[in-house]
Amino acid sequence: MSARWILRLIILVQALAALGIGVALSEAGASRWIAFGAGLGAVVLVRLLINANNFVMSARCASPTPHEFRLDPFGSLRLFAEEFMSSMLYANWHGPRAVPRTRIYPSSTLPPVLLVHGYGCNSGYWGQLARRLDAAGISHASLDLEPVTGDIDGYAQLVQHAVEALRRASGAARVTLVAHSMGGLVARAWMRAYGTAHVARVITLGTPHHGTSLAALGVGANAVQMRRSSAWLQALGDGESAATRALITSIYTHHDNIIAPQTSSELEGARNLAFGGVGHVALGRNPRVLDAVMRELARP
Image (cartoon, rainbow, N blue to C red; front, side):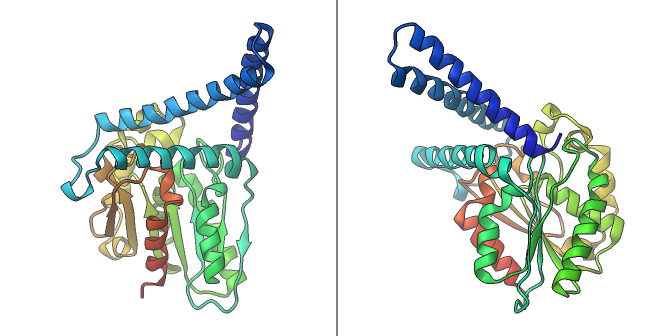
């Protein structure tokens, strides 16, 4: 089952749960508006608690936060609110409606961009960045990595097909990959399998280059590969040259609620750009992060 249909199923379950709670409260004597408002509120509360639990679990395995990135209570509240909003918008709107797309701007002087999503997501993750690329007239394409729980090396062929299609459509010799979370490992696996001759740059967002402790809770071959110090990650790193690492920019946040320790996103030999006050899903929407991505795309 694709991520799109999984998300649609979750929305259906949420709607039935809210309806069931509303009907029960209505039959118990509550007014219709209060009953169904409570049903909706219960669903939102559950999603809020799931989001909060991610922060709790990641905090148990967190790397020390540098002083300049530490947050006051207001900053922590803003971090949580942005991450919760980003998660809800993706899971309930962008993800369920997503279809991979290609936009070609013949006048663009920058390499076209292939957008590679992360674990359990799909091309809908890139809505905000795609708008910026459209506004800047930069050719780009997205893809869906399936099956959802597949082997990361197996996704490399999907990336290769997408890269070749984007090169043909744009007439460009090289492409830039922008990849979120697991997508960054997919990009590295693709370079290992197909080489770097057609790579202008790889920009990763919140990628567990050295694994994440929370991967132990995931399902699928890809989750196993993303565990801390996995044999797959070790082999991936051992097979990379300094020239390959120099093509990579790793953007990450010291408050990532999925990648823990957060410094797992630091990749030796790559250009590492650290942020604070941003959650894992919000990396694809946060204006400061997207500004940095656009600067990296334009960097010679």
